[in-house]
Length: 589
Ligand code: PEP
Ligand code: MG
Image (cartoon, rainbow, N blue to C red; front, side, top):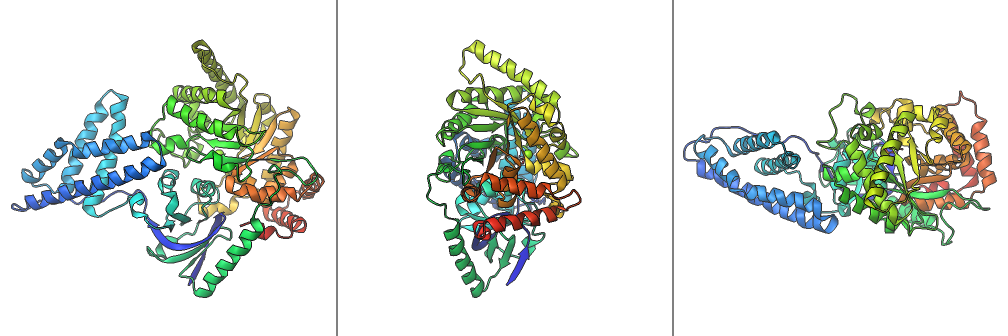
């Protein structure tokens, strides 16, 4: 039995077999001469690979049909057609029988030619098909070389995914029903695999450095996402201990049946508790856990899932459905749709440019302002959806007021166009800015004059203030919500918002941290938006605290001088919280 420690990323305790995920690496392509007389044998390898690939694709299509929209399936249907195309077979036959080239090299050469032909075409649709060639080529070559990678097909039993690291697109492609937990070498508590794990309520430990080399497929492990550990080959006593911890925690964390709206304080008043979601998450499920609305809808997942631009209609349909469902959550319900936030570690093939430093690159609102048609399409879809329920729009990664001014001009133009077309939308749709770049927090007064609300993205605000990459485990210790510099920016932003009469929320992961989220509420935050699974625990905490106690909590932290370390502040906070909530540890499952 071995226990490894990493970063506690998504709470929860699970046990299960390991599934080693190797990621989308390059498939190695052997090249050799086919001896005379062995051509038929070589061609049979090709036929078998085509048949296997078709079978895999058909089974993928049937899985996807149950889980996602028709559009996603159509892409794979095109891949099937490509496999059945007689020109592919003919080209491979020629290469093998005439040029004596092996099948892998023949497939590669054919696809390379097709790719070049399509790339030259002056038609966006055909250019788009180039990526489909890559995909089919990869499948065929994987089958020929035994480099099988399709996790949908391989991941057949509930398992703990052990990987070097996972991109957001790889994570969303995993079949949720068979994912018990994530354990990765890389990543940090706020990397996007971490956020997805939390959104999907899947326990996760990241930053384990070399877990992939210490387990084999099928090894039994216990993963503790609350303590950030993974135990390999646990003995019986450890398994028994885990079971008793699980039953104790689930009894303690059960939401009290109260009917009191989530976020209500002990003697009145409240902090609105909203949910963070992305397309594909069923909004209706949020009602049971008490979410009073959706505080962050990460629209970029429409791009990440498809790896191509979603159309206005596709976006509208997705937003409308989320808006309608969100409006049923509570009397205060609204949904805040965040405009496309790509860049950093959220790259979209074919859209994201190669940049030396993508975290500081042409991302989010900058990307939208430099790709005005993409921006306008999204604005049209969001505005149209706003006719179906209370919708807010927010811009990610705003660094200066010029960006807000420019966005306002474009939004006004899109509204004018919709008016001309007689399309319904909410003329007063509130528009907000995410405060997640230090410059925006420092300049919060000027920002507040131009928007209807703020939402503080602490994941990025901390990353950029501390200059510590949120996806790099080596600097994860610098993710410090209680660092005096962060506390200063938080207070400054909240004060500016309230001075200008606008509401301010937090939608970064720190909102769901019992110690830090409550501190933000004590500082005067109006709303906390978090992965839905954490709402019951936060609601339970707030029901035990009064406004005057929150004031006392804020005063305690405000009285600490600027030479205090993040750890000093955190310890003081923890001590205070443990005094008020003696069973705090049990609540933090
Ligand atoms: C944040 O930065 O805190 C945030 C909510 O945005 P994201 O995590 O999606 O970058
Ligand atoms: Mg962010």
